[in-house]
Structure formats: structure tokens, C-alpha cells
Length: 267
Image (cartoon, rainbow, N blue to C red; front, side, top):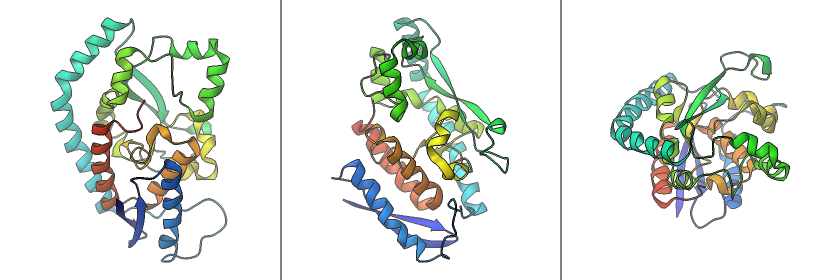
């Protein structure tokens, strides 16, 4: 099925055709890339150097923030009791806190996000899905650490607990990030959250990525998620950051519901 996403770029509407079904993750990336000339045809020729970001309209930003607040409050109210029960089960299954805090990069307020000494960060909340000494486990197994550094993931991660595997495939482990959304550190829809060591993988596009709040879900998550290579995830992040709009956000939101229900690409 062909999904049409309208991207608002420099206050003009440009059609992007992303074929999201019955294709491999690589094909989705390729088709997203081929859609970019539709945007380029209606703006000045690009200058050498990193891509430039057209400023989003104030109306879009206000609407997005209002939706983030209302939706996160509603979802937290619905899932508070289930999350509390799951947290108790996590503590029962293995020692350690039920909530895992991951230090990730925030949207940068400084003019030079490449200056690593000035990078702003925040703690993203997740339900703990791994054994308590997960990071130490990797350091004790160099072959796993080497594989993890390639794409910042392990397909068959031995550190994940039995309950954690269920929480990951159902995406329940990410629900505590609604608190980050409510606090304004994240948005419901945006690029992937990343850590400081990952920033180098974005190269010249790093300032562009850090000009937007990370999202609980995004274009990468509805186009393969963990099935994608790291480079493919970077590519989709950049497509979203440069083409975000109300229409695109709604499309991603609807696709996210479908992906979560079908448990696509999560492990």
C-alpha cells in the first residue's frame, strides 16, 4: 500500500511518496531518498556544506507541544496502574530498580551543538528490561561489545530478561518516556534519541538532528525499527527533521499504533 506524506518545507507543501508496505527496510530508505527531489524542486539550489533546516512555523510548534501535553497526560492516566504492576514484577524477577535512566542528548539551545563540552543532556526513562549489570556484562564479553558498537543494538541480547523481552516486543518499556514528553524534554514524534558517543555517526548533520526534540516514536520506528541498520536510521532521522509537518506527524502516529499492535521490528 502506498502511503502519501505531505511535508511542509519552507512554508510550501511538497509531496513525498513513501512505500511502507511489502518492501524491505532498505527499499523504504531508497524510496524516501528518491522523494527528496520533490522538495528540492521548490527551493533554491543547496549550498555546499551540511543541510540547512527550514524553521518550523510557530503554529506547528505550538500545536505539537499542546498535543504532546494532552496526549501524554491522557496516556499516563490510562497506563499508570498497569505500569505500577509491571514495575513490581520487574523488581520481583531480578534485583535492581524498575526504572532505567538513560542519559541522552537533548535539543540544543547553543549555537554550536558540535561543541561536545557544551552538549545538553537529560535522563530518558524506560522500564528496565535487562539484568542489573548490563553494561559490565558487555565489557566482560568483547565480542558482544564489538557487535553492539556496530549498530548500537544486539539482535539476540543475552542481557535481556524474560519479562524484559515481552516488554520490548510490546513497546511497554518505553511508556515511562511519556514523563519526558510531559516535561518538554521529548516529543511524541521526532528523531531517535541518541547518546553522546553516537553523535559522530551523524557527521555534518549532527547540528540538524540536535535542533529538534527526540521522539517517543518517529519515521524510523514505522519503517523497520530494529531491522534497520544504523545508517538507515540516520537517513530516516534526517528525512523527518527536514520535512516534518502536521500531516507527517499524523501519518507516523497512525503507523505507530499499527506497528505496536503487530509488534513489528521490536526486540
